[in-house]
Length: 197
Image (cartoon, rainbow, N blue to C red; front, side):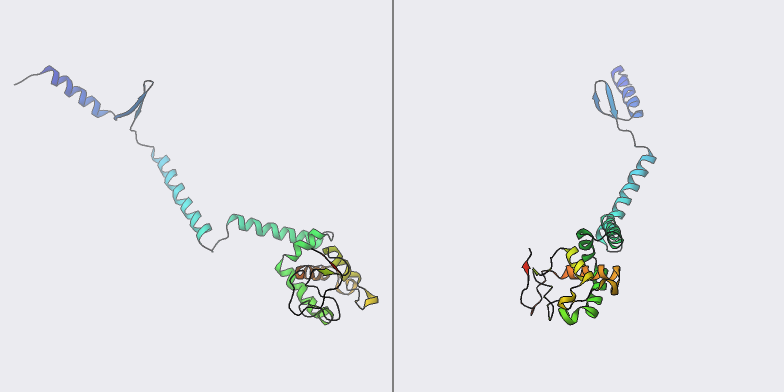
């Protein structure tokens, strides 16, 4: 038998080295070993990956759920509409209402009943002026439109709609007229008043 003390020491060193995880890096006498990550940490990591994929799939690729930004914008639009409909009449509140589809539809319905005989079914003008161009007789600001509808011009044949329609319907009607501005419906009446950009 060949008894080599060097090979015996080498075998012992290999055995002790096999019992410890291998050292991958040493820096400032700090050894980085190949230890396994804790199972709880791995579970959180994989659950986060699955959640992130599910979140992306639901909110970014399908139309089944609105994205958080879309939901936020809808909620803010609803709040702005509610404030505009009950607060004081301002250019800003009427401009907000002019962008709301349901308010504009309500105003369009009222316009068809009350205003279409003089202003045409699309606001293009008949006996009354064209409401779809950039020319305005009594001011083009939304509050000017609201004031014109509310107080009317009895000397020119337009009644004061405010007492007959009430505040909510006048606001909706004003929002609809504001939404007509610069749509330039074909066959509109010749321009009247001052141009407003």
